[in-house]
Amino acid sequence: MTQTGAVSGSIRAEKRHPLIGATVHGVDLREPLDSATLKTVHALWMEHLLLVFPGQRISDEQHIAFGERFGSLEIHPSVAHRSSRNAAIYRVSNVDEAGNIVPPTDSAWQYLNQSWRWHTDSSFREIPSMGSILHGIEITSEGGNTLFANMYAAYDALLPDMKSRIAGLWVIHAHDYIIRTAPELAAKKDRGTYDDLPPVRHPLVRVHPVTGRKSLFLSPHTMVTIEGMPETEARALLDELIAHATDEKFVYRHVWAPDDVIMWDNRCTMHSVEPFDNRRTRRIMHRVTLVGEGAPVPA
Ligand code: OGA
Ligand code: MN
Image (cartoon, rainbow, N blue to C red; front, side):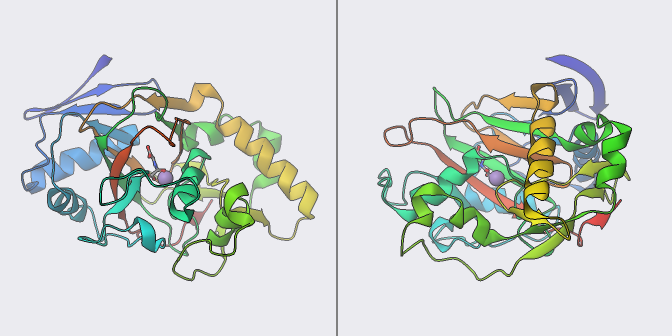
């Protein structure tokens, strides 16, 4: 890790990757965040896109309180993954609340596997999420790392021809696409219980409301097609953009330590989980998800 020199009071940030991610030291997430700290953390977040707070042994209540300093919290559409104690906690876990590994035949287990695909949280909503805050409670020693891609950098690196080709395009996103393209779920009758969410349209290139920077807005697990484009052409274009944006030069791989808390900006990043032996290996992460400030602004 290299020091970036971002120091404010006792808060210190160290870059983890040249393009995305910094570790933040000197903030205790168990304590209420005062306004000065909130401002510093927010500025670091906008600069680095993703912040890692190591060694934060927070309760769900403290996790929620930290999230609420940045805005309101979403309730996840998948009923099975909501904590029974706090609906705002999304349980990214192959272990149920009684402590047992969920059987691979269970829709909840199968739905969660879809986070192994590249995606942006809540891209299926009319107002997608602003950011997500994930607490690593029980982590894996093999696989189960989380990959994060910088979507500003991916946009900036496109050739001018591609930038003009995609300017003004709109993508149809649907929550249902996650389910119908999941091999184990597609074939089933009972695919789980989800809030009903109609398809939405989002710009392919968006402008970040805080930084003013342009980024690619991709979320492969919800992107059905491009509006007004023949199906095969749309699929080929989306696949080309996904391959480009997930090139390793744009990607930070997070290897979890217990009680890492990671906060990422869904408006300029995309992420995926690296496969692990989820039939046998326990992995418990809790997430709160920040409601977006408005529909994505087209570039
Ligand atoms: C998420 C997700 C990441 C992880 O919480 O949004 O996709 O590491 N999971 O489990
Ligand atoms: Mn996710």
